[in-house]
Image 1 (cartoon, rainbow, N blue to C red):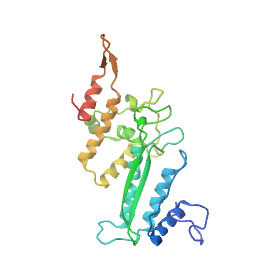
Image 2: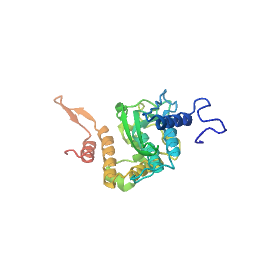
Image 3: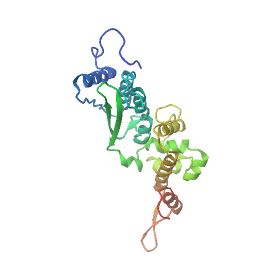
Image 4: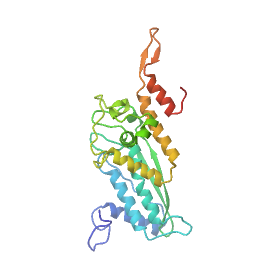
Length: 261
């Protein structure tokens, strides 16, 4: 996409446009010194996630020549890092629904800190209202959060062995929908290279933002532990007491989540 509407008319003089709104917000911030906000809302599939990406890309573009003394990274580098985090946020907070292959299942507040000159100094991202119930149950033609399918498809054989992770999503209750089978995911979350390729994108973001290899490995173990937890089944003893039937899944969950055997 172009970074601004073509032609000689001033930006903002045409009908509402993502870049025009982002540009006006940025210029009002500099001229008034007051904090500005853009609210992106709409029904599922309206394009909220993509709109947010474009706003961030525009801010990274218009500040690319600016820098602030004492900063280890330029405004352009900080803006690029902010844009780059999107695949990771989508992996953990987006899921496939009937209406949208990459539907955000949470709210997000992105706060960008800007100097008086207009250079990006940093940013913070707060998430809220995550649809936690989707982790344990989802309807037909729906999916759990992308990250679970990504680790099933993307982790190496040795990593899967360490995480006691199967290569078939159908083996996990939390990945099966109301029909009892995992929803087919050709192309992954955005119809591209599939879950394995998108796992590499998520891993790349984690590495670029400075997450240690040890912490990344712990993250994969925790996610695998949650999948194992979902496979625990319960029964009833002859005395009418509840009991755990699938002790293998229980053992895997305890080990991966660092519980007690």
